[in-house]
Structures are given as structure tokens and as C-alpha cells.
Amino acid sequence: MNSKRDYYEILGVGRDATDQELKSAYRKLAMQNHPDRNPESKDEATEKFKEITEAYGVLADAQRRAAYDRFGHAGVGSSAASAGPDLSSSIFADFGDIFGDLFGFGDIFGQGSRRGGSQRGADLRYEMEIAFEEAARGMDSKIKIPRWDTCAECNGRGARRGSQPSTCPACGGVGQLRRQQGFFTLSQTCPQCRGAGQIVRDPCPECKGEGRVRDEKVLGVRIPAGVEDGMRLRVSGEGEAGAKGGPAGDLYVIIRVREHPFFERHGSDLYCTIPISLAQAALGAEIKVPLLSGSEKLRIPEGTQPGTVFRMRGLGVANLESRGQGDLYVKVQVLIPNRLTREQRHYLETLAPSLRVENKPVPRRAQENVRDSFG
Ligand SMILES: [Zn+2]
Ligand SMILES: [Zn+2]
Image 1 (tube, protein in one colour):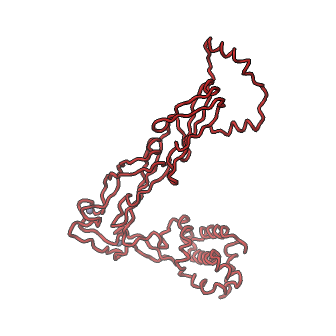
Image 2 (cartoon, helix red, strand yellow):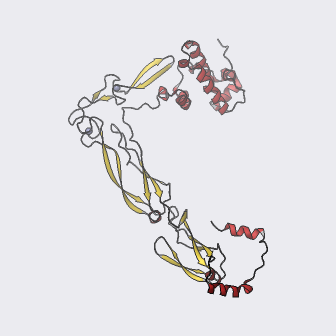
Image 3 (cartoon, rainbow, N blue to C red):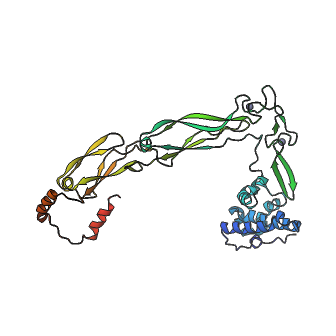
């Protein structure tokens, strides 16, 4: 009677097994010994399955495992006894994930059973492509989404106006059918009413008893300034209508931002590269930098080196969180003419002796600085 086997032995793990080791040992054994997989030796498999399930039920619970480690079966006696033929549903709640993917019957333990058949509507996903400038500035837009909407004719009840849905005779209005199999109680969605618990004998002509109709809804959506590519905006309650009076799902607008011909964006900062001439770099100049709208002057000081980055404060994109404004970084690229006129050649040749530099390798640290500038 009291010759119960050691729980660790049953699962074939050491006393120091981790939760993960316990779980995988249990999964493996549960798979091998599941009664449904052993039709020839069903009773034996059922016993075995009960045994490993009981062992795992105790060892997977840190508190009960500690008690078992100290006092053996006596330490978990009462609960272990009740973990016998009618395994408590709370144990199975933890097991839901294991069984769910092992055997594909998560419904067995009552998860996924719905009362009265009302069902939340599905979330909708809408991809919205916007221009780079629109993302920076923000915009109001209208989107058209095809979706299920609550039927206005029957208010979502599915029954013809003036008539009442009647209680499903198969399940008595519960929406679920239960049957005993071994030590499990299987519950399954009632096939007659498909879980609704009610049967519409006189269906609404508009929605044919579905309670919802296919519709196209035009929604105004405000895109805040500073959105970025891939962001998701949730519009609560604008997804599909629920079935049989359930709540509506949500609408997710996924933002896709088109690329800009010359601006690059990181967060709220903008980056671009502007070429300047040899003379502008050496003598200094004032150039016009294009912005997302309009332009701004930028002073290039004399003696500007190729690759120098200028920061133009506050000329980036709105920051969604801080509500501040990012900066614009302009990198100058000094263009060396690849073809000189006879006159240019003459002047440069005249200048050349006074512009002589020592053609010696640059120290490594100085090289890194050059690479640090963006690009
Ligand atoms: Zn209707
Ligand atoms: Zn039913």
C-alpha cells in the first residue's frame, strides 16, 4: 500500500534536477505513456501516466518539492492522494502548455471553453505607407478597412427582429459537451450550436444569423509627428466586431515610411551629405542646406576638411517621446575636379609649390577620427 515509488525515480532524474530537466523528462514520459498512444495496454499506460503526472505535479511545485525532499511522500501526502484519479484542475492549468503542443488538445482542461459563445472580434492589421516628410510632420489620414461589423438589423443577436433565439437542445445552453474518458473529462464545443448555447431558428435576413456583416469602414487616423518605420499604432475597438455580442477587436496600423532621396533618419536626427568645392573648403563659404520643408543657410569655415560633420540644431524630426526636435547633421564631401580646364590647371600648378604637404603616413589615432564621422 505504502510502497510508493520515489518521484525522482519515476521521472528518471536526479534529486538536483532543474525545472527544465524535470519538464523535459516529464514531457518525454508523458508522450510515451499517454493512454491514447497505447491502445493495446491502455490500463497499464493509464496507471503509468497517472504516476508520472503525480510525480511531476509535486516536483514542479517548488514548495511541494521542498516538502517532499524533507519528508518524502508523507510531506505531500494529502495533496498527492487527491492528485490521484481526479487530478485537480489547478495542476492541469500548469500543464496546459505541455499538453497543448504535445497532443493538440488544450481544450481538455477547459481552457478555450467559451461561455455562451460570445467571442471577441479579431484584431485587424493595416499597413500604411507614408512619405518620409509625412512621418516627420505627422498627418491626418483616412483609411478604408474591410471588416466584420455588428449587424444593425438584429443588433448582433442573429435572430430575426421580434423573434428569440432558443436554447440549444444538445448542450442545454452551455455550449460545451462533456464526456468521460479514462480519468479525464473531455469537454468539447457543442457541434450543434457551435458553442453559442443558443440556436437561431428564425435567422436575421440581413446577416443570415451570423450577427455581423461584412462591411468597409472608413476611419480617420491621426499619425503623430515623428513616427518611425515599423511602428504600430493601436486603435482600440476598431477591429472586427465580436460574434454573438462579444467585444470588438483592436486595429493595429503598421507604419511603413518610404525612403527619402537624400535624408537618412536615426530616431529624431536627420543626416545628409553635401558636396562642396575645393575652393569652398579652403576659403570658407555659405551654402544652402535643403530641409524637409524650406532650406537653411550653413556657414562653412575656411580650412574645412573633407568629411567634416556640421550639426544644425533643432532641424531634425519631432521626437515622439520628448516632444523636442532632433538635429540635422550635414557631412561635407570635398569634390576634387576630375577634369581641369587649361586655365584651372595653370592656376593650380602655380599654387602647388606653396601647398606642398609631407607625404608621410598619418598616425593611426588621427585616422580613426576620420572614420568616426558618420558614414
Ligand atoms: Zn442580423
Ligand atoms: Zn449546443
